[in-house]
Each structure stands twice: as structure tokens, then as C-alpha cells.
Length: 325
Image (cartoon, rainbow, N blue to C red; front, side):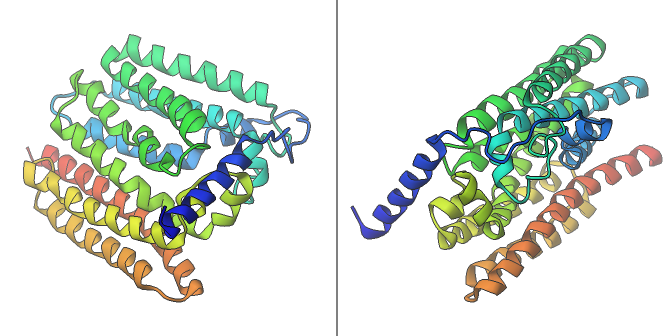
């Protein structure tokens, strides 16, 4: 086996050995009764906000109309479903969260909510959001919401996250479903346009989270999570960020080509894509560790702006078109 491959294999073996060791809830304290704020924190409101926004865009750009009341109900159900996924993720990952600086302040490690309470909370929200969406809006959207929750909890959280450095690549599908759910809430189906929005978020997820992992690799190593920088090393992670960014940028322009986005979208997506790719290349070429960390942080922050910008322009274009018609 080549020396480089052997080294990667040894790192992976070491991580897997650490992951398989019992945690015994290291760092967890006994819960003393959660507040409303603690249960809201379980729902990962910052993640939920991006989910709701992309779902809103999918709903607005979809052909056809949906009664405003039904649209609001659909978005609430999607938000609650996303929150349910977050709560179940925190329930299952309480041991990991307690070991990581970034997540040690979450409600379960702090002893504000018990794992059992988080599990029950997440399950009630999951079932309630799916059933409500199905009964009141349509079952196609409800099925996609159920698939999203199941994929995030069962496939990403329980299966992939502790077992493979491809956890973010495959598991990223869970965060890419919301615009498809919004689209299905209006049309009762999926289409090439909704699949394209899914694909953009799916391709965006690896460089976004790997940039975070580069300056949080110590956290992931302590928790035994086989993120790419921990298993394959920083150099390979930077290379993969460039590859995925190079694939994402032209994909982000495609909505303007197929008519989902207009001329403004085409210009904005091109400019934002050029900046994103430039940051990825700068990260790849940086030869100083401190500089690499600074660029990784900038790339992580800009990647959020990039995705928000693409979907915001789609939304504004459609609203303006509707107002003008």
C-alpha cells in the first residue's frame, strides 16, 4: 500500500476505534428542568431559519398558487419538522456534543434537558408536522418532509456521522430537501426545477461544512467524529473544497439557463460563484497555517451568503414578476 494511503488508513482506523469506545455520557450533567428557551435551542433555530427560507423560495417559485393560509401552514410544518430533526440529532449526539467546544453549551450537555425529554420532544414534533402537512396541504409534501427527517436522523446522524468522512457529502441531502417540499406543497409533485434547487444545496454542503471543519478539526478529533480533516488531513480537505466548489459554481448558474431564474439571477450567481471559487482556490494555495484558518473562516461565512444570495434573487425575481403581471 502506498505510504500516503497507508497513513490515511491508519488515521481512519484510529478514529473508528475512538468512535466505537463507550462514551458513558462524558461531560453530561443531570438535567434540572428545561425552559422554553432550552427546547427552542433543541430545534436548532439558526439551521431552521435557512431551511424555512429555502422552502419558502421553493413554494413561491413553483408554478400555480397556494392559499396564503395553507402556505403559512406548510412553512410552519417544515420549520417544525426541521426542529424535530435537530432535537433528535441532539438526543443521539449528546455524548459527542459534550466533548466539543462548539456544542458543549447545548441543552443536554448543560443538563437543562434530559436525553429522554429531547427524544420525546423530537418524536412528537416529527409525527405532528408530517401528519399536519399531509392532512391540511398534501401528502406529497408530507412524504418529502418525512423523508427529510428520516434521512437526517437515521442516515446522517445515526449511520454516517460516526462512521465515514463522507458523512457530510451523503448526509447533506437532508438539508437540500426543503425547496422540494415547498415546491410539492404547491404542485403536489417534484420537477426538474425543484431537483435543481435540491442539487445546488447538496453540492454546496461539503465545501461549507469542510471549511468549518478545517478550523474546528480539534473539536471533531476529540469527539471521535471522522470529519475529512481528521481522517484525510488538511491538504486533502482543501483539495476537495476546490473540487466541490468548481462543480457548484456552474450548477448555481443553471437556473438562469432553464428559466427558473432570470437575467439578474444569472449575473448575481456568476459573481457570487466567482468569489466563492476564488476563496476556495486561495485556501488551497495558502502556505501559512494562520492564513489558512483565516481564509477557511471567510469561506465558511461567505458560503452562507452565497446560498442565501442565490435563493433570495430567485424569490425577488418571482415576486417582482408577479407584481408586474
